[in-house]
Image 1 (cartoon, rainbow, N blue to C red):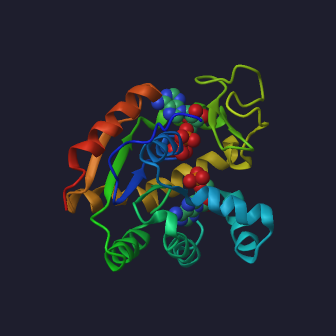
Image 2 (tube, rainbow, N blue to C red):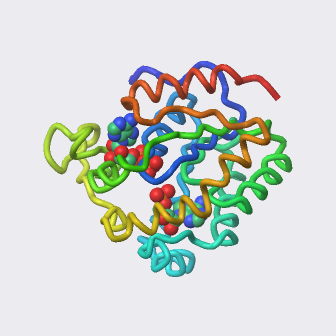
Image 3 (spheres, rainbow, N blue to C red):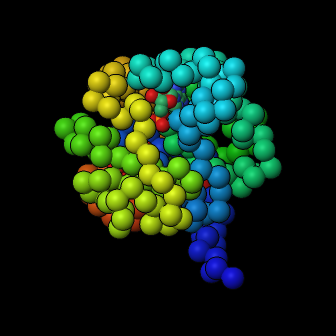
Length: 231
Ligand code: ADP
Ligand code: AMP
């Protein structure tokens, strides 16, 4: 039997990863969720699944995502509200790419209160925008397990193949230069104000996301452990 590498303590709250596209939210959220044995909830992944299955939500979201814009709050909020009602979320969960607007953050606050969760813990991945283009154009993702690589910084052992499960690696269609510009613009305009919003609430924890994946991971864990158990 594989060893149980989950963290012995419970998370018991929502952890939110905030930061621009390419900051490392998915990489760190996946690792933290695994450590605590809770779901990793990436709204981007959920929307891409709707697109690939051709659901009505996917049909609405597809052209918006292709332009690098944000999907309307109402659609994302309904999808998230349904997801966190599932049993696997009862000991907490890790959000990646949500919330992305102040409207989403306010709604999430109400939703968490309604379900009796503690206040969320927000990890703000702080990074100089100049490195994001390289991180995003170099990103490759496993089609099977979702593992995230970078052809410049964290290449797989064999080109195009996931080290973990042998799955084929793909490049996201919105990781092309012409879509990255609008995505970074949407972040600055609509999502960056969330840092001030959560800082005012005393929930924001800044982490230097320019360090190595392992170092950022250590700081994230230290930060989460420092407040776990607090109301
Ligand atoms: P986000 O979810 O914030 O868009 P990802 O976690 O998908 O970001 O990471 C974007 C790209 O940057 C990926 O190719 C990933 O391998 C790489 N990456 C993530 N964290 C780091 C890091 N600390 N140093 C170098 N590259 C990183
Ligand atoms: P991501 O995988 O987080 O980089 O998201 C990819 C794309 O999905 C974004 O550029 C948006 O079009 C859409 N998206 C993901 N999460 C949200 C969200 N919380 N609100 C609005 N749109 C989102």
